[in-house]
Image (cartoon, helix red, strand yellow):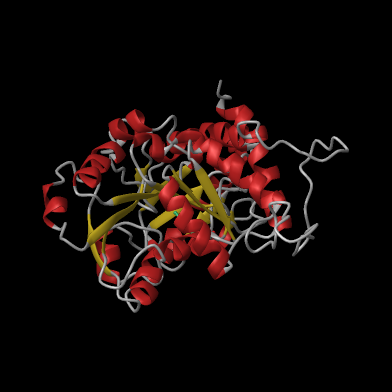
Length: 384
Ligand SMILES: *Cc1c(COP(=O)(O)O)cnc(C)c1O
């Protein structure tokens, strides 16, 4: 029998609950770099923390169970995870990406991966018609890399449909699942091969720790990634692994409350005259609403909106107090982000314009506060 998702947040599938003899309920922090051997060939299974550490291993089991993977690997940040993932590829390999991606991923692909000989094409994968997409597939094409919903424009991509094309063409389908978290969406069960998380966001959940994950359903990929993590050395430290374990315990209740709050904020923003557009996949006339409903258990806690003037956008960023003007997302505190100068500052202007990321676009990561307080603050700023 498999545990339900809220139970998994505490125990994973139950395999590796604390083995500590004291009966500690909280999994111990194995703050050690190395492990003693009884004799030659008598490893305890742990040799050196760059390779594996019991606290990191427990975290990996929990995340793997949440994503229905066969293995998960914990890294020192989301970007460390994506950087390690790129080591699966060789110079000359071609990867197709969606056109709307996290700015840090675009920066990595454009400045580091291209230098290492990887070729990229980007295309709008949220378009219903994927024929344009198939035209890009060549002999050297190895993978598809997407996020859904996308950041910051909330475009939704049909994971199952893309997985079919990936299978047919022998491509890996890689999905960055940071925005919905495993609580709302499990790409591996929809046919993806590899899932990426910035654990800094919903998994950690408290805006206090950096972490990243790769989760896979393939033993072959897991083996290659295990070799990469021990070789490049970007695995998550024991204490940070413990902070993530603690954060994940409340993932279910944080996501539930965050989504209720996000829906309330969306309702209010849609009634507000100075707000010209609201992007949230939970809105029935959002172009990706039906696909998101089909492939996810919720619409998440991220809301993007456009205000009538650039000046108002700037006033909001300057005058918020309860809501913080800060990069990042996925924590208990509501944050507002200005994609054009923050998360997407390094993305070429023409790409931003094509995606609709203007100087009037703001992104909210809705936290777990009383929404009345959030709304009161925005109303005060809107009508000074
Ligand atoms: C934040 C983020 C990343 C990068 O993760 P870090 O933990 O900041 O390195 C990758 N993808 C998405 C969608 C993100 O939001």
